[in-house]
Length: 185
Image (cartoon, rainbow, N blue to C red; front, side, top):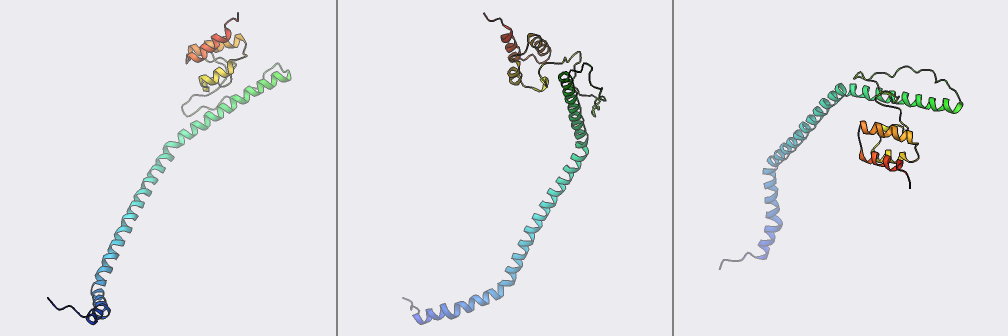
């Protein structure tokens, strides 16, 4: 059986030779570990920088595309909104003229500005779009139209039925009109 180190030898190993060996090892290897850590840190930061630069480049390209392609769309949306506002103002003036007893229509407003597509937008009566008793009829869903049908005179219901049948032909709207015009008995 080999000789067991004495407790004094073990204490010397642990308290003297171990720390001296560790210090010598660190002195010899620390510069190489430091270079390894520095290289790893630089690689990570370079990778992150390249990723951010790529994202910024993509954002720049998307922004340039949006500004070039989006401007005509914004102009069209603004022109449509102005035309709608003009038409609603004309309708309000007509209602006010009716309330004040004026028989002549209000002074003619300038025609709506054409959109970038060349079409103008208006809610006034035309041969294919009569003035209906329900405001903004074409923008309403079937359920919204049905809510507004109750209490309308038969002449208005007939006009709405004819317009609906010739355009969207929504069964919900047509069925409700039929129900409202059905004689009670």
